[in-house]
Amino acid sequence: MPTINSTKAPMSYRRKVILGCILLSCSMICILMTIIFLYVSNTANRRIEEIRADYRIIAARRDDRVELLTEQVGALQHKLDTIPDRIADKTVTKVKEVVIVSEAPATKPAQKP
Image (cartoon, rainbow, N blue to C red; front, top):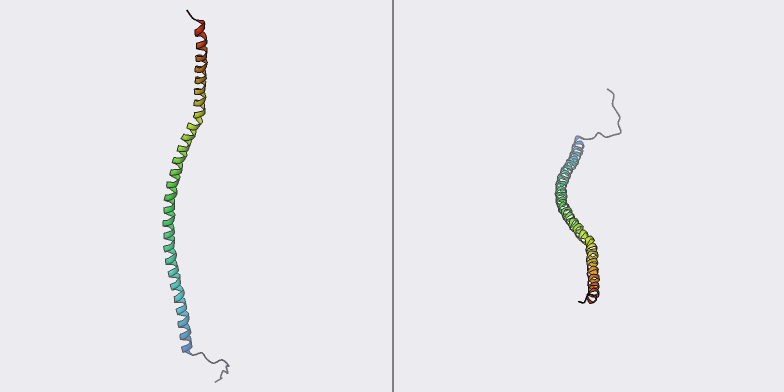
């Protein structure tokens, strides 16, 4: 029977079991950390969606208010645009009244009976 002269010492089963347990525990830690990460990430994503929904509501209210203020500004701008026309009309009527009043006394003294 031939004998094998090997310089390597055979690895004992005990070492293999310990190494297997270490690798198994490392993989379990990785799996556990992955599960924790997914749970935290999912919770954070839900919270982010809630915050986004709140901000959508706030933005909608802000847009409604901006629209209302835009309408009010438009109405005020229209009123301001019509003021010069009314002032010009009033000025014209006042000038006509002054002209009529100034002409009326001039004709009255000439019409003495």
